[in-house]
Amino acid sequence: MGGIQTIDVRLEPAHAGWRLDRALAAAVPTLSRERLKALIRSGAVETKGSAVRDPALKVRGDEALKVAVPEPTPAHNEPQDIALTILFEDEHLLVVDKPAGLVVHPAAGNLDGTLVNALLHHCAGQLSGIGGVARPGIVHRIDKDTSGLLVVAKSDAAHEGLAKQFAAHSIDRRYVAIVNGVPKAG
Image (cartoon, rainbow, N blue to C red):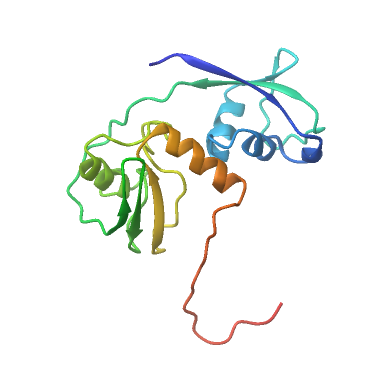
């Protein structure tokens, strides 16, 4: 642990005109767009031997890039015994029903009492490390005040496979909303 993995990326012609962070997220689905933005800003993304530091840079669509990614580190968050409603679980993943009001992963203002803390307790350290220290096992998320199902990766292989499916939009997502009144058409 603690090393750097270099990923060679060739952007697709279809990405021409896209922001660099968006094009990289499509090309490297195992890394979140926010993680890629941070890597870009830190100088970890290079083209032709020069660092590119602007996530909003428009790409040509045929660039060859190198992305220097620090290896995943084990989570250091504290496990907390927080009740979870688990709808499915096997050795690779689990599906949890996240209630409204529960933050998915630690962040400023919510350093504990999160879904990640509950998962660390429930899974006893058996979560994918790809999400890094703050987001072990987290492949996608929903807002604090939103309830719904989340798929959590227990292995790195499951994390990579799920991330690719989310990036390709091949996972069926359905949303239900309760509204007051009648939404305006169009």
